[in-house]
Image 1 (cartoon, one colour):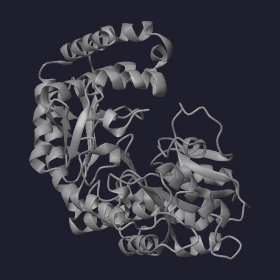
Image 2 (cartoon, rainbow, N blue to C red; image 1 turned 90 degrees about the vertical axis):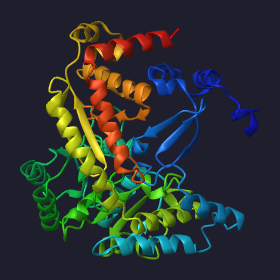
Image 3 (spheres, rainbow, N blue to C red; image 1 turned 30 degrees about the vertical axis):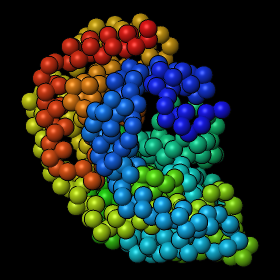
Image 4 (tube, rainbow, N blue to C red; image 1 turned 180 degrees about the horizontal axis):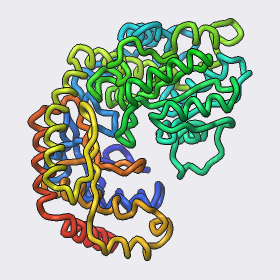
Length: 466
């Protein structure tokens, strides 16, 4: 058996071997294509990672939505250490938790309207499924259809995965799922009309972080009108974009008076240290569904880890930090650097960048072009790669990500959904001059030409398999 001391002495090759034997050997093959897959992180603080060899890496992934507060925020560490030092009670559902009660209050304080009633599971997927379950219960099981957009990411559990608008999810899911076109009100009207009063919930991401696109104000307000008229529970999924990421506390809050029936959040809600999520419902919706003696415990039995003490303490501190340090303003300051800088690069390198899009501290760079030989490689590639119409785009984007990492010490990522953009999504503790650093680094990388970047990336991938 490994001890903690043993683990902290493991070398990267030993970790790879353990992954191959006990986790997933294909994951090793995939991730060692990149420089970061062949290195270990010793420590992390703020927007930076420190590797085993002492190098510092500027992490502009933002933990894929988890790290608005950066790595190991000192206030969050202190709150968790205090909870542990004082030996506070972690879990016991028959005692009331002051931490859970206070967190529910704070959520109601910062959210608009009567979004007052919170439930606190562990993951974004659980929050989505809990919100949909609430909507079904609100209608007492008398309606059977839930609507989702054709471009959406809501999780990978059986229920949330079926609500994710991606073709690759080929598992059984909840019944009654139907689809409308993202951003198309006429499509929503047609689908709602086709179900003749049978729709109990409509689920939408106001800003789709996995595709870097967003709904217009007109579309969101139109959804609100349709759902009001048809008595459909409107659910906004802001699991990624909450807590300031796109320049407002939640993306929908930039539109005054627009309030969903249920809001889901996770990721940065836990301050980068806690696995916690929430769905927050308008008071009349929640009370009709669950506020009775017979149903009061119906939702809380869905997860053992509901409202764990240290998780709630962490989220309490994370919310207070986001408000006190004005994370929406910090995101807007980063966007003021990233937006114009990336647009300039799109004009400067039209053969490499098709377009850029984003808001606040969440931007996508849509890489296009690359060597024609990749078209032939795609046709000859084994397995699913040969059938992937985005194969060339993914390889070229990965080559750019790899060069940013190896040559400039900048960590970015790309999404598997939509048009597979390279994503720059810094933590909100990142400074504007660090955002400028990635713009300058991307300029340097693209100036070398995509063909050379791809050749280098493929050569390194081949050598990493030997």
